[in-house]
Length: 323
Ligand code: UT7
Figure 1 (tube, rainbow, N blue to C red):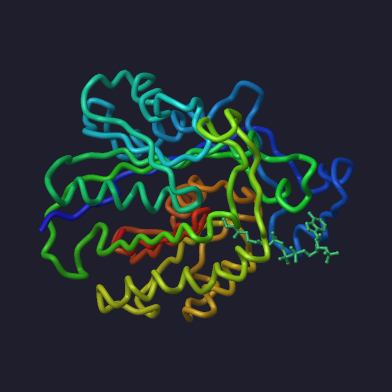
Figure 2: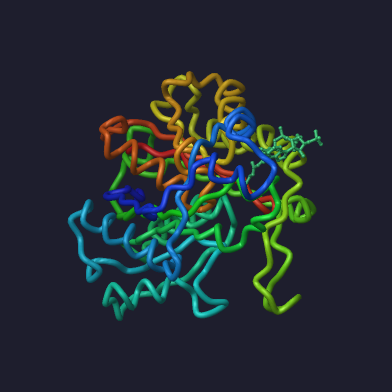
């Protein structure tokens, strides 16, 4: 059986750190409120002129280096983003060009904060059907560009960044001892679209627009739908929370992460948390967290890793893999 194994990962964060205290003169908020309600202490903000392609390219190069590969080895690039450099072409082809890659295919995938889960699952499908052997999956965002900096209910929550992984075909036995993606589950329900959206777009307003969120409503749905796709992963594999070595959730809010882990019975020491330093980086948050935990030696070969996200749409999904 063909399995999709992650053979390298890399990430990139813009240099500028924006701390909670930096908002205090801009909107009516406080470090205390932000930390208590979200767990966020600081986030990175892209420099003027620094784009999603810049962040994604840096993460991509780091992922390729960690896999010991060059762009010539790739068959495909899938970029998860909701903040592309342009309406078209896809930012993935911009990164493809910068990597000097003239072969294969590159395209963007749009599922907001679940984008990396959707892109990784798409890569898994191409690999398991034999259509591609090596795919670069990137999550890159510059959410700072779509924030309403006068809206305290949203502007304090998000940050910029990028993470990337190289996914490679490997032969497995078809059971849970295999390395690679063991199961993946994607969901969406467009009836929730008004709870988290951007109020502009090429076909509606002709503008880029700003992020709008009914935070309490998103929060109310989050834990339930997150655990739903994780239970689907357990049902598909026969694994349980006891088998999980590392839980790498989308980093939106520390309270959502803690409540999800508690409901699933995953102890806090197995949960990777970066939201305190990155804020919510949408499609970049999971690869950023994953790469941090791989880089510092927490996630090791053979570990069972559970990835999960939910976001605008709503979209949500899980990927269960053996590192
Ligand atoms: O990545 C996609 C998924 N996104 C998420 O998962 C986000 C989900 N939602 C959340 O994380 C939380 O709902 C928020 C962090 C956005 C808000 O936390 P909350 O505990 O749900 O607060 P709330 O919206 O109920 O607001 C409580 C109060 C309100 O004031 P009143 O009406 O009680 O007087 C807000 O106006 O806090 C006020 N508030 C703030 N105060 C200081 C809202 N934002 C701020 C702020 N600083 N930045």
